[in-house]
Length: 467
Image (cartoon, rainbow, N blue to C red; front, side, top):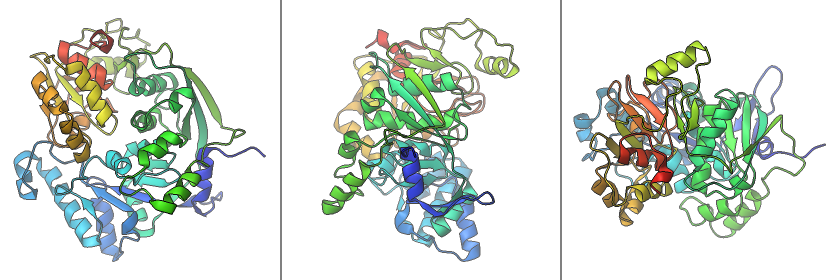
C-alpha cells in the first residue's frame, strides 16, 4: 500500500462520516472565515431557524470586499463614499456578528483586512487545518499545508450551524516546480505561467500539491500568491508542505499555539508532508529557470504570455476572438508598449508587505506617467502600519500614486474603486474576466514589479528594464 499525500492526511483526519456512493463525506471544519458579501443569506437562515453559531471561537469575521479604501470616520460615514448596496452589506455584517456573538474585525480593529491576508497574519491559519470561506480564493491558506477552499452562501450557513460540511473527495495532482527564479521574475509569474500551461480547467476535480525545489525556496508570502490562484486553474484547492519556513512565519503570532502546545503543534505539522511513496492521480513537471515576467492578454488568467512576447495568433476559436475584441488587442500585437490607464497593486494575491516593497523598489525616485492613475492598497491594517513604518507610503505618494486604506479595493468592481468603461488596468489581482474591475474595464494581470514599471512608463513594461 502506497503512502499518503499531504491532502489525504488532512482529509482523513477530518472525516466525521465517511463518503459513500449515495452520500458525500461529512468533514469537520477547523476554521471558518466570514465576510460581509456571502454571509447575509446564511445569517438570515440561522435567525429564521433559531439556530446559534455552533463554534464562534472557530469563526473569524472581517470586513473587506465592500469596504471603502478612502478614510472614513465610522459606519455613519459610509454613505458618503460607498454604494448603497455595499453600505447595507457592511451594516448587516456588523449587526449579524453582534447578534450571534461572533467577534468581528471591523473598522475599529487594528487587525482588519482582507480575509485571506489576516488569517495567516494573526496565526489562525495553520498546517493541517480544514479552512473554508464564502470566497473562491480561500485556497490561499493551502500555502501552510491546510486544506482550504471556497464554499457557497448555503454552505456558509451549514458550517455556521454545524461546523461541518458535505464534500466529495477530490482527485490529487502534483505540480513539481524546479529551477531558480530569474531576476525580475516572481511567484505571480510562476502561477500565471502554470495556469497558462494547464489551462483554466486543468485542475478541475483535483486538489493540487505544489512541490519541488522552487517551492521550498519561496517565502510564505510567495507561496500564498501561488496557492491563491489555484482556483483559476479550476482546482478545488492548492496545498504546499509545511516546513521550517512555515514554522518561522507562524511563531509568535497571536493565535498560534504557545509553550508546550507550540512544540506539539510543530511536531504534528512537520509530519504532514506527503510520504515519499505517495501517489497522485496526475503529475506535471515545470522548469522555471528560463521564465520571464508574465502578463495576461485576454479575459481569463490562462490567456497569458511573457511580457516580451506578442498576442498569440488567432486560433479560430470564437471565445478567443471575443476576448481580444473586448481587450482591444490583435493577434501579433506586442504586449509591451500597450497603453495603460490605471495600475492597481493590492488584493489577496499581492497586497502583502514584500509585494509593496517590490513595487516601491521600482517607484523609488521615479514618477508615474501623467496619464496613469495608480492605487496601492495594503491587504490589512497591520501591513499598512508596517509599510508606513518603513516609509513605503511616502515613496508611493512621491511617485504620484494613491495610498489607500486596507481592503479588496479594485480587485472587484463593487466598493467604489472601479474602472471606467474602456480603461485598461495592469493589476496584481487574480481575475481578468469581463467587467471584473468595473463595467467595460479591461484587466491585465501581472506581478507588483510589472505593474509598477507599467505605471512609470504609462505602457505595459518589462520590469527588468527598471530594476
